[in-house]
Amino acid sequence: MNKKVAATVSALAMTTGLLAMSAAAPASAADGCNTNVVSGTAAAATGAKGQFFELRYNGRGDNTCAWGRVTNGAIGMHVWVDRSSNGGRTWEPQLGLRRVDAGTSVHTEAWRDRNGQVMRACGDSGDGTAITCTAWW
Image (cartoon, rainbow, N blue to C red; front, side, top):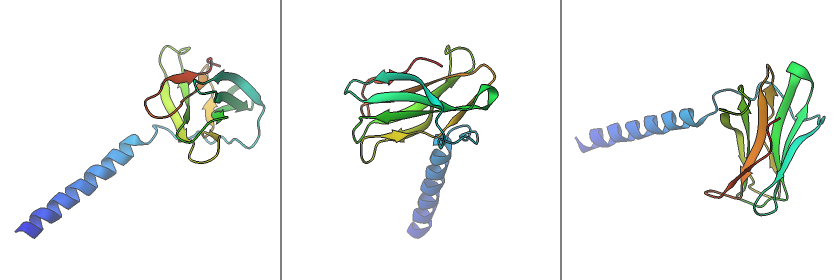
């Protein structure tokens, strides 16, 4: 009897873990964009510990893609992109969230910026620290 209970509890824990992992995934993929070609930096901001956040982009019009990048960072810092369809009043948060695991820089995946959407790059100095964001672009 105890083996059956243990097996049931184990199966339940695995199912709960899989559901939690699927819920943590972003609502959409990176929209088929890439970061191989950089047209420019649309906006930039300096974080609390001197790290530099950039919203970089490539393309034009409805074919524009943008991504966030942190440089001059340190292990534990994060960067992500927010995307809004109403000028920044509400937004899709933390698209492509990345953590600096080694070195001093990391960038997110690139996300499509079309149909009047605006984007910004944001990041922090590590878990639980103040967030810095670039201007909307």
